[in-house]
Amino acid sequence: MEETSTIFLRVCIENAIDSYSQLRSAPITYAYHNADAFVKLLMANLNNDSDPEVTATPKSNLFTKALTILVLIMSHHHETRQTVFDQKPFLRIFSQILETLSVVPELSSLQESCMLAVR
Image 1 (cartoon, rainbow, N blue to C red):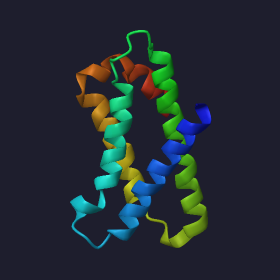
Image 2: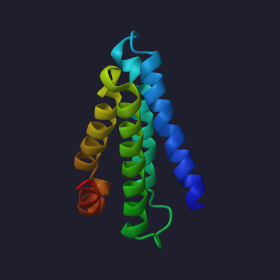
Image 3: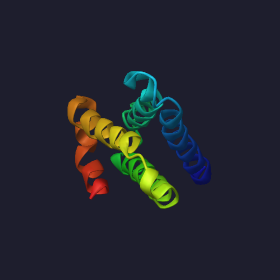
């Protein structure tokens, strides 16, 4: 299960980044659709209230795993692309995560653990 979720998150993030690269010349809202969709999916999983037995710890572990994978992919892109590295899709994902955490009241219980994962 652990390996499957890691692969799923990696594929989602890489898809969002590659989609931005392919649609860079399109209107800006189209270029960021997959990045925004990934953030919505991640936040929906964190906000999942269907199982009252699930505590904040597994949810914060999911958030930490997603951030770790995102940073590793960003580092890989930076190393391989060097001067042509485009930070915009990564910035969009990070800023959307922070915005969602601060705006959605249902995630207020997770804010502290998620912010600890960011540091």
